[in-house]
Length: 112
Image 1 (cartoon, rainbow, N blue to C red):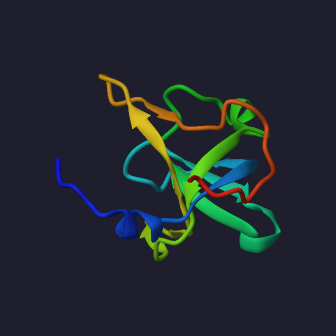
Image 2 (image 1 turned 90 degrees about the horizontal axis):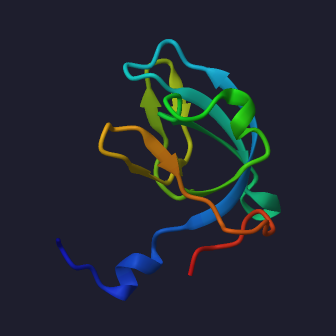
Image 3 (image 1 turned 60 degrees about the vertical axis):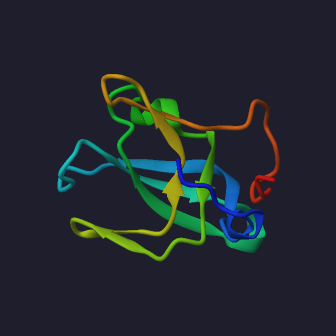
């Protein structure tokens, strides 16, 4: 594991957002959804692609709060521009579990 300084970590903007919309993303190489997230008034609405199809239906995700990195440069995935990264962990079968706050909090709060 490579260590980083506190100053380097402070550059990463990990914010709380609420999932507003989830759409199929058949053009993606790996099974994924196109997800629209509200990160509050300071950050606004962002879109992301996420490989959450193995464990979550589209209906399961609507209204869920997630933690997302909002200060990466946009990344093109197939014909879609991803504007943020939803954080998650891989299970042994490569299924992704998204990371969320343990209780509802205002959108836009920064991970400390």
